[in-house]
Image (tube, rainbow, N blue to C red):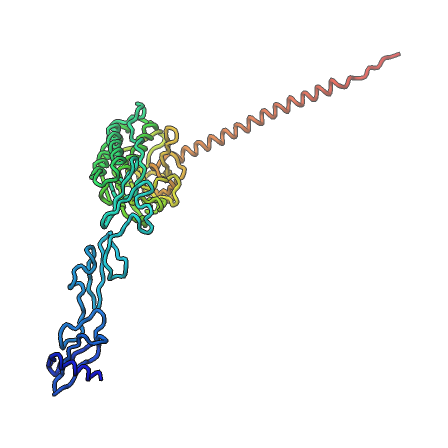
Length: 458
């Protein structure tokens, strides 16, 4: 009956005579009829059930099933923001960034609403307002908050008070008033720009250059003038605050500046998800090893960027006490994590000794308690030889290697032993004196209490 049906169809539609050697394949089955010594290919359109699978068609009489090019027939198969990729019997769509498919891989690309998407309850932070755009979004910040010029970062509170110029002469550092004025103006622009991109175009690079140049001048002026803990604390604290403001504004992923007396490297990562893995920053004499997990801290507060900073001072030879000599350069380490007083994982600093003969070096950091001083708290030496010392520290600050601390410790220990010995000797003398006086007192009391008997002659 099926053959008869196809033969009847051939009467109503003209058939095509094909060369005897040609075979027509339809769905893997030879569909042809031997009539009068020739192969007869029948028109198969309209036959039910269809002889071609979905995604295939018979383009002309006498041919087999061929692939339908969905991408060629309709250039908007995947939508305005998608690209169509044809494959045998089907097709699939790829979407531009900011667009996705709500169905299977062949569905059209539509805009992602980042402001209300799953897991994006606060894409701009709890204090920011999210504006959805076609293929993107933008964050709007209230006054006092900033995205540091990146309109897809979370709004973060920014305090401009640390950049106020110093009012007391003992805290004033030459050249720093002009730098602080620049930073203060920059900070005020950030917290009043509503998070609009372009408000800080190339500002980060310019401020980083100014910071390096001003730090050069201060290092030259500090050497040979004796120790001044207050000014050293102001210098290191101001540099750290300044570079934490500058780093999020840098446009490049890696920024390096190497001047006569200052060397700085800043690594920045920007993404919607926190970066992972190791971070290594290296300059001429110091290497920093840490992780992005340490640099970020709490993932729930990830602002959309992370950075790590290594700034080396080449000419700070003696900072405070002449008996505490530097065996390495001083280096400031900072990251985007605002809580660095007790890191979950320690950072590793590898120092080159200024002199290969340096021995008994100690890992220290600059503590700004009071006027400021070197401290060993939270830092330990992992390995040391005649040329290198590896330090492990559980907090961030400015670090260095000092020589002379071991000798000072031994002297202090000897002094403690001497004072302890003298105290014990003095206590023994006082005790002996008290015992002598007690014995005399007891002896006199006994002699005075029993009078000798008197004998009278009758």
